[in-house]
Length: 303
Length: 316
Image (cartoon, rainbow over all chains, first blue to last red; front, side, top):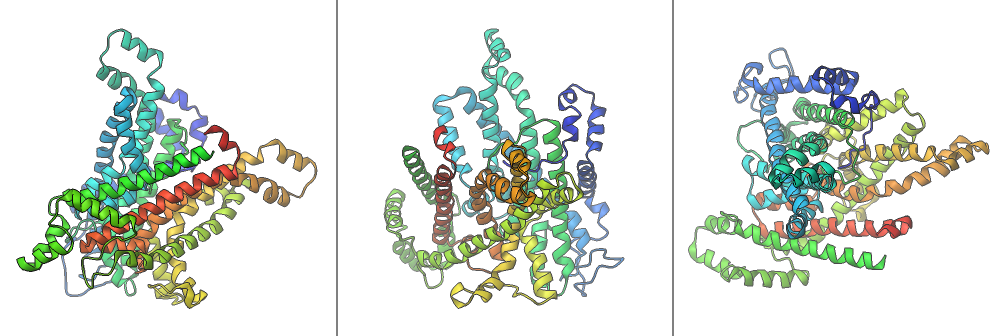
């Protein structure tokens, strides 16, 4: 996955090597050295806080309606209201819950499945490797978002199907990284050593190979979360995701389409929420890439 | 090289076959499949029975598969399940030029933004301008394309009234109507790609500017403009060509969403409308064609590399 955004190299120059063995407080100092990553962390913390405590943060019930509608941003409704006079700010705050939940849960699922497949394929090789990798290659031939659309076409629409579809669509990224790491670590002396001491395959994989594969997987997971959030928003926007009154950022924007000629705030703010979230995650991901010293892989970006 | 290309072509065909087969069986294996749903909607058992026969749904699944596959090979993708049962191949033939117009224009827009931005970033490395462009690239990558589309509509269609908000006008009916309908979708689709492209050009330029032949050109006293454009940029283009494959993936995926914002009846809109209407012959056909575009554009890009950069031939 190429996100060729080589930015702040300060952290790397400060010594990514020494960082790994350093106490935790130094991580924070390195984070603060990167302004974009600091800003990303602050924004993301605020959004996460708002999502977790949505009922307390939101000034209004996100589904409460009234007779007036499409009110401009004001003191009572900081971001205005929609066609059913529901408070836009409250809807966006509640929408953060679903966006973050889908982003985190789908990446967790595809991380677990993808890493398992990649580790098995790389470690055992042979026929198993062949079967797994043909499947991964098939996924790899298409952008993640397109795979997710295909899967929704097969499974049907709805939030749970969107989660399944997005999870399955992102597996290939993790599987390829995990397999590549196994192949490079398998022949290392310490793995040979463990094997000659009679360690089981499971122990070698879990204790010796997996921990050393973590840095590129962490960076990939961070990047994938931002793409998963974009994918969910896209699917909801197309009407393939959640229906009903549940506010999600993609759905709020989708509903807004009919009213943007009269109410610009409906078209601007939900997208701004998506952008700020994704941008913050991308800044953090870029910083992690530098700190963990993960080289860019010249592979296709998945959108 | 020929062996390599034959191998790649064969692989492309296998991928296409796998996609076609997987989609055919999975659409039918999932409980509550669209056909059943549609038959249920009709409510009349006799009519449902007739429809079953008409679409051959009363035959064993493997027979259906072979019959379907035979027709696909002949270019027949079946008929839409709804309305006047238009041939899917006709729907797609009408949609195809729209999506291609959008993809090509998006590509041009992305290049127009990315090439100057990438070159300037590289020459003025670490300047305020470079940092601003880096930040802009991050923002460009983080904006959902459908949101860019909505912002453009609010600005240029609603407030300034310069451009039509939705629709499509074929090129045969004039260049300006075509362009005015497509320019906003093209910017929306091209934004993310131009961000990636600008960063690629920047790092490729930085690599090239370090090389000996640029130093030589400089010591010869060549004008800086000439060095940058003639010597550096041309060579920086080689690694940049590799992103053209990525371009297709991004532009097509973007088109799927953005076509729906602007109500352009391209492949993406056909696919999504098919899914929403549970019109599974349309979905099947659209998936096949969209997949074919990815697989064969990758194949063409692979073939192009070997032509553009002879060094690649050795490695394969």
